[in-house]
Image (cartoon, rainbow, N blue to C red; front, side, top):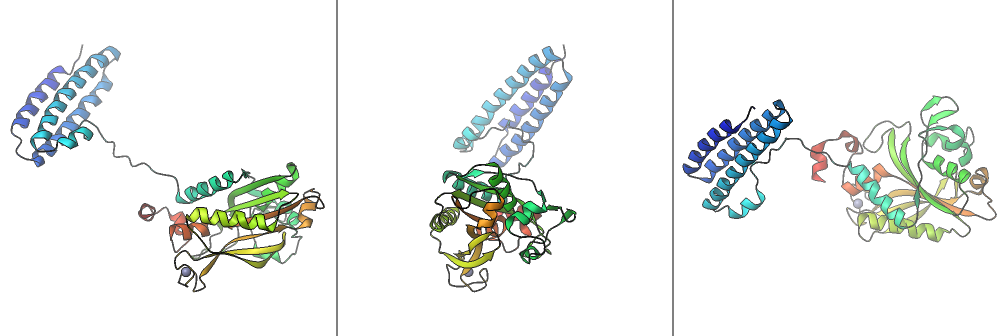
Length: 335
Ligand SMILES: [Zn+2]
């Protein structure tokens, strides 16, 4: 039977001599490197053995390793590195592989999702390739409605099949398939014909929410969104609601938060305004409820939507939306 005992013994004698000659911590560190490298060689030879030989030789290697670790422990003590001994194992062979982590955009979404789940919302997903009727018509945007221009998208086959320009289509699909009351969020990728610039990309992430019940009110909407923003940023944040227009909600409101950089004093991030628009919202238009088959005399609803990328710029203090997609590890490591 082939075995590694001679090889390990010879090396052991060699190392023992080197331990005797150690003069400094630097010498000890060099010896650690030699030891790791030799141990790696020994382990790599195991693959040439059959099962029985592997058992015998695995034990030989372990005995060698344990004997050497004892020597290292006394050497650490000799150079006053006693505490390091406990956490330092010179036999660990590092592969050099660096592990990745969850993308910061997804991390931010997960934080947001948790806040919504705690408030009793469910998460609903839908298709990214949509029909015109779900993306526009059922949302009170018939053909040639001017609001379609603001959400110009990419067509798979004109005029019927397109890439969704918002996740509101998921809201319509939900209203058609679930009986109220319910409260959902619909996260996902959306597409618009926007040229790439510091604030725009033709693809981005949205999180929209919809609550349908017999007594949903604008006050509920306000309290949910104020809670959301304060919990995301972990501090008091000024929030204001401005009258706005969306074809699918009436009344509609744009929601601004006080600039987290200047606390409302005015800076470059907020263009001197002290406020940054982060959400769109409103009470669901009765025509939208009717189109989705919901009794608009009995039920009332509110909806809201935000661009996750835009919020990520504020959350991570980035100045360009493109940085989110460039996967420049040096940027993400600083966050
Ligand atoms: Zn500011």
